[in-house]
Length: 105
Image (cartoon, rainbow, N blue to C red; front, side, top):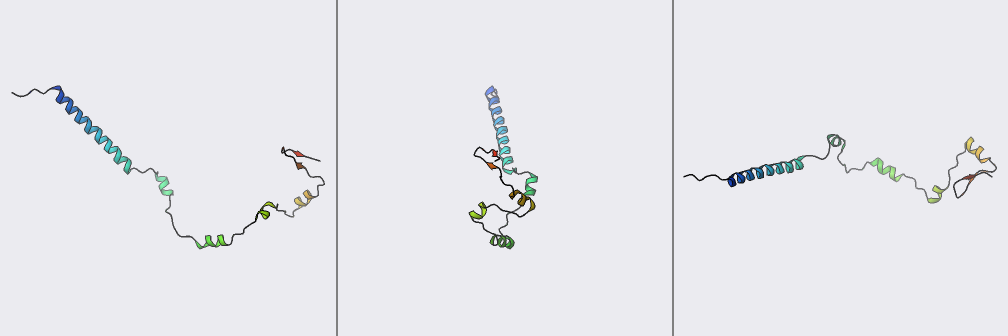
């Protein structure tokens, strides 16, 4: 006599099929995440490889750079123009107060 299949054999088969399906799905997702790029094609076109060479022109510009001390930076630049000469002729120029309001004398 053949032994009768019970429900437990069907449950075991269903469990194995489910395990196989979930395992294959997880494996595919891991493979997909490893092979997929996070950078879009537009970004890949815009990215340029780094070059370690320094151009001689850049070095020359750095050596020819003019340095200013703090006094030269704080001193205002005066340009001799008609507007500047007429502005200097004003007898009582307006002054600023601590509150920021301009007071005319």
